[in-house]
Image (cartoon, rainbow, N blue to C red; front, side, top):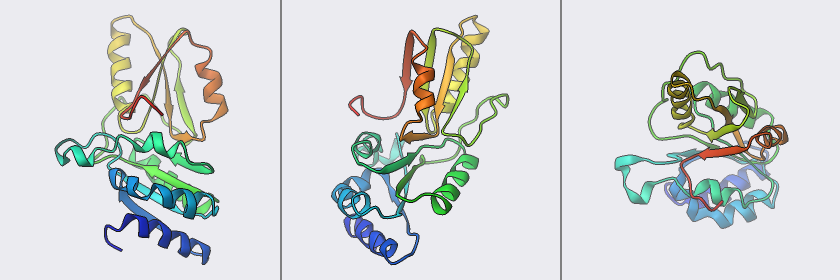
Length: 200
C-alpha cells in the first residue's frame, strides 16, 4: 500500500482478522500517522499484528522529519501492546521469531538505522526480557536498543578508572518485566540512557 501508513495498519489488522500473520515494516517517524489505527484496529480489536519499526532513535543525516524519537512515548500509551527494542541482530531475529510464533497481540519491534554497534565480547546476552550486569550496589544505568552498546563500552572505561556501575539492558520495554523493576529499586541512583523524549 505504499506510504499510506494509516491504511496499512488497518489493512494488516484485516489480514490478521482473516487468520494471517501480517508484518508491517515502517519508519518510526511515519508510524505516528497511524496512532489511531494502532489503537482502534490493532490493540482494541486484539489482533495479532506485528510492526517492524525501522529507524527507531536518531537517524543522523536522514533529517529532522525522520528522527524516531517519539515512538517509545506514544506506544507506551497503547493498551495490550508488546514492544521490543533489541540491540543486536541475533536478538532481533529471536524477537521476530517470538512475535510470529508466540505473540497473541499487537507487537512492535524497534530497530535502528544502520548496523550493529560493537561492544566487549565478555557481555553475553540472553534473549530474556532484560540482561543485568552487577558491578555496583548503588548506581545503575538502564538502557535499551542500539545505544546499549554505548553503555557497555562506557562501563569498561569507568571500571578502568575504578568507578563501578551496574547495567540493566531491556530487550522488552513494554510490558516492563517486574523483576527488572525490583532490581532497579535496589539502587540509590538510577540513570536512563535512551534515544527518546523525557516525557513518556
